[in-house]
Image 1 (cartoon, rainbow, N blue to C red):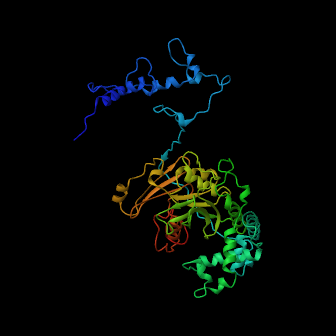
Image 2 (image 1 turned 90 degrees about the vertical axis):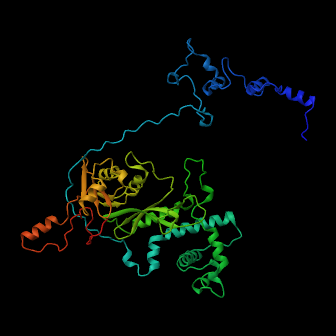
Image 3 (image 1 turned 180 degrees about the vertical axis):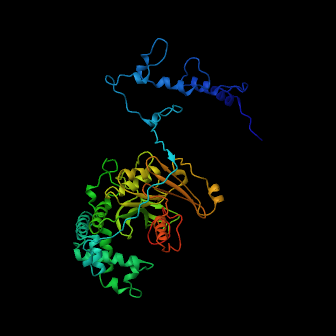
Length: 462
């Protein structure tokens, strides 16, 4: 049976504000009477406005109000005579409207029917500097990696050895070069476990005869490229997320530019360095063969030679692109900063926009790219349905008053392309007309839509 509360229990409960009869109880008012909640202002009800609650916490300068009870406008505060406190966003009152950023006026694009002048693609020649003397792969590697890089690596590794494990014997240049060679070898010849290269049953003499396993692991664990004692803290304005490898990145970029002349035809694209360890710079890209890794922005020539590269996530790079260019377009501008005027630049729709093409045009860099349908600055091209009715090979194009061309060509599906230099005119149309006038046979397979499908001696697209 349920126990019935005695009179003492009832009296105790009445002290808490419950008399057993009244069902409509203002519990907030009862708690306020007991001092558990702050007293409301006069005229307030049970549910008061939050904006009114802020009045209790305001400073004493609120007393300097006008006679009608209105506050002074914040814009009228004399900043020369009064120090305003720093705004702490954590103390902002709920419901207070956030200050909006100043609106940036976007460029207005005007599109008209037309085309650009036909221009041939320049002859691209790669001129290596001193590579003719490289008879063996190791000589080519030393050109790219550099003797100075080995010296930097040896110095920083020994500095870290002294601060971390002073009992380890001094590392020599010969040992360091052997370690780098072993690392390159085991990156090609795979084994389930790295220690298996030194095992008696399955070991590989090309590795085990060069250096002992314990010494190899000892040097690899101490391998360093920068002095940890000089690393800025995360709160420092000069903080560098890539400080640990900054010296190596600078050395490689310098050697890449030093050992080959810039080509006339360049391309900007991304590349993945496979990596699945713990690293803040690691990204995931589902459409890549190596889905996990470190993303690299590369500036490569038509030959395939990488002339320059940046690491995705580098906080020292300029990432805030101008209006109409964006952060992805700024990546192209960063890599093309030192290109000579007249260098042809190609990139895909991840970076592309008419604003980027215009920015490259101002730098004197001809460019062509694929485009996304939502990045054409409202260019009034024919829709996919209209082009599909016209059949495969149908095309529509417009030109802006600045000389930026945007075209939509229908193959199995629409393909968007843009350029600040190339036209949609068939490149051999004029040549074929001249050949027919002279009684010569034209090209056996005319290319009706190869204006932006550049001339590499084939009919493939960009």
